[in-house]
Image 1: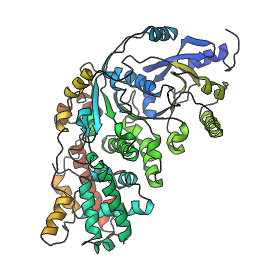
Image 2: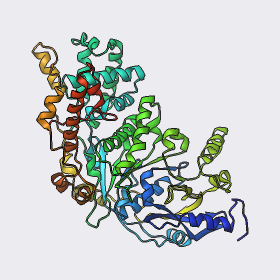
Image 3: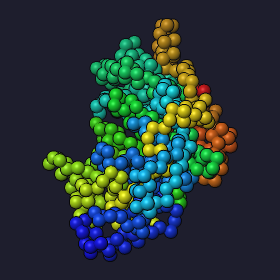
Image 4: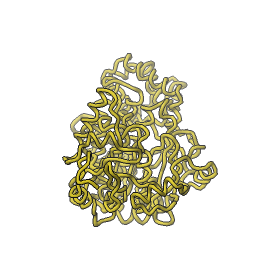
Length: 548
């Protein structure tokens, strides 16, 4: 080995990098250090578990191995008792449910980097957005829980229309009209543009034209099949927190084949899942390892055409959710796909190869290199010469300081790196422990039924103003009872027993939130404004007790 090569790697630098990844605590093996002369199996690159809830980024050009890196990290987390949520865009992460097949090429690679590779399979929970139950357990949300900010992004509304939608949500809330699915939202907007037109002035002077735009957008979304995403039973994100019989984390995989046809809806729906976790989980502070790591693939779709208000809420969620024991990894092509305020929160970086074919590509390359810690390596040279399954890596070390930038040949996942066999997929779906409670959609009494009933009787919309103090007295639980971290840990294996013994279920979170709503309403009512009601809203939606 020469003393110095074209990447700028010296024996001294190899030792420095290797020392930066020599962690005393539990960690996940990512691969071995490399340069253009070969690998250094003695220099193992790892990521400590405590850094996994400091968030991260997996980026790189198409075909460079981002999905396999996601799979590798997910396997490492599950093996150490951490629950995982990931999005499966192409369907080739179902292979997690069956052991990988050894081959001469695979074994040669693993031997080269010093990996003791053994085939393995993991407990997989297959989820599917909307009504495609054949792809897994259906995941739905109510329009009310989704909230006006997320709904505005789905409907592609401008800032003025978004503000109008917030007022419409507020009006329905004060009238006691439950927004469960799209026909409920459509019914409310239709009412406000027809017989209830005079009530538009009551909620802030929304123009009929703006209300009409919102109505048309809802109708278009409904005609495109978007209605299957909304309804009941709504998914309880507490079901992400499960361990299997061997104490390994369950990997919840959300199939999103609709990404190309409805990218804004799908990516925003995934953001709702993350925001719901933020709303319902207790504060746990710094932990030796996260309780859940959330992988957000095709993350650039989330930020495309997003309003400033929406981006502010995304940044707030990402900043604060780590204190709930949740880590977030964004997967996309370049760091520039992620807003700077979000990118600043991503402490771990796995950067696969980039290609610079155009002046714009060159600019992206330079900007990407600038996001890494200082290093003597020529990163522009390295990043354009990485092969498939190789990446530049830096993570947060034991003291929260970024580790040296390490060109790494990544380990091979233990599970199958492709689509699982049909029999395996069928078995995974049939053996789901949560499927039965979500598979059948329901249609409870809500805004559509209430307004239809009022119209048939020739009356106005129900005027049941919510009495926050009365609601809080009727539903108030024992405020002194809180779920501890130990109780959550004890109940995490079995979702059925968890609901009986006291994990963070949506119903309980809703009940506690109703109490807070009542307290805030009493405190603010004397000011003669709606501030008390508005402050009780969650980050994106409205947390209110479900009518079951």
